[in-house]
Length: 215
Image 1 (spheres, helix red, strand yellow):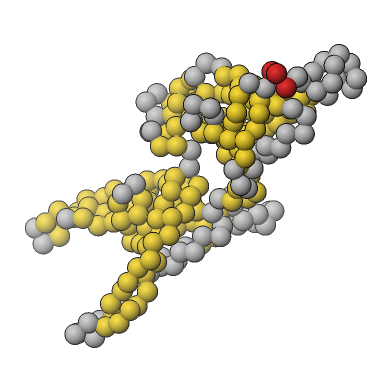
Image 2 (image 1 turned 135 degrees about the horizontal axis):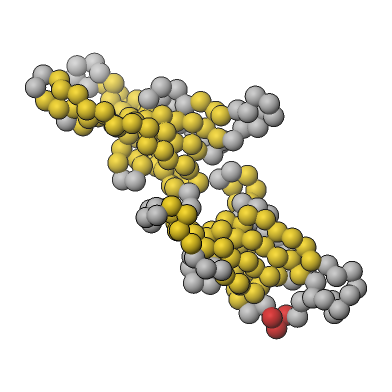
C-alpha cells in the first residue's frame, strides 16, 4: 500500500522540534490525522491532561520534547514516536507521534519567568549604590513553592515566601538579580547553581532559590 494516503492527513498541527531544554527549532506545519482519547484528571483540581496521537506521513520529524500546537490552539509536548513500516505489505506506512496535552492550575506546560538583571548605575546622595534593571523572559521554567513562614518583629507580622525555580542551562542569573514569577517579584537568595548529574555529567538546568518578604 505504501505511505498513508495524503487524503487521510486532514489536520494541520504546529510543531517546533525539540533541540535542548528551552531551545526549539522554528515553527512549522505538520499535516497529520489527530486522534484524541478521553481527557483525564491525574490530580483532582490540579492537573488535567489528554492523550493525543498524531498519524503523519513517513519521515515526519517530531522528537520527544517538541512543542505541539493542535488545530484548536491547545499546546502540549511530544512524548515519543514510532515508525510503522509494513515492509511492503498492504498496510499504510506512517509515523505515530504521542503527545501529552494539559494544564496545571490553568498554566500551560512550562512557565515563563522574568529575570530582572540588576546593574549599578550610580550612587545616591548617601553614597549607596543605585541600581537599574533590564528584563529578560525565560521560557520552560519549573517553579516550586518551598516554604512560607510568619514571624513577629517589633510588633509587626512578617511573612517570608521561598521558591525554587529550575531554569534552562543557558540562563543567566546572579545573586543580585530579581525574578518575577506569576506576577510577584522575588529576590534571588544566594548563588544560582547548575544541577549536574554526578553519574552522567548531564546538565539539566540552573537551580535558583528566591525569597520575598512582606509585612
